[in-house]
Length: 161
Image 1 (tube, rainbow, N blue to C red):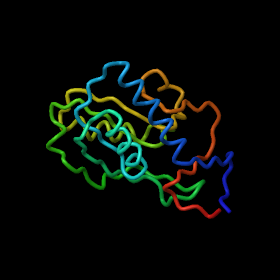
Image 2: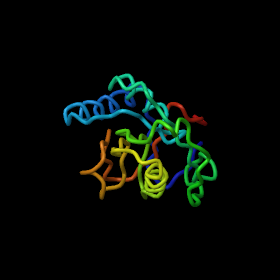
Image 3: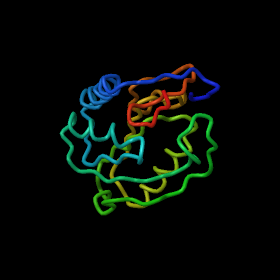
Image 4: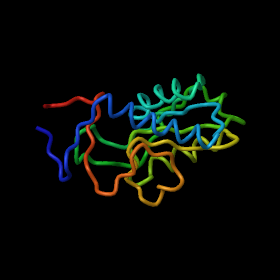
């Protein structure tokens, strides 16, 4: 049984696809030019794959950042560590879309943006499936803007139930 101080919410692939389609629709309605999708590994990868298909963007570069000690609820978080970037040569002069599954404190996202800015992209946009950071509701493409904290268990995560 997963123990957490927050309501536990298990989402299925249908929910992930619905929220991701909402993000894609917002990006398309804004006529946002995206050349390169950059998921933050691991959580951003499934959403990035869906967005790639929905937006017709084939180019990807992945950034692997690790903060959590493990994947358990209430886990300890440390400072972000860059584990590597793939296809870094594609970033320069590209309109990139950073993708992740959740956003809370913004520590990982700010770290990713700082790293990617070193490669001189033209523009950076951000897509988050579950956005818990109220300060970013107007500046990020969010699948769901979460006003009350909950612990989200994704279909790609190990589940004890």
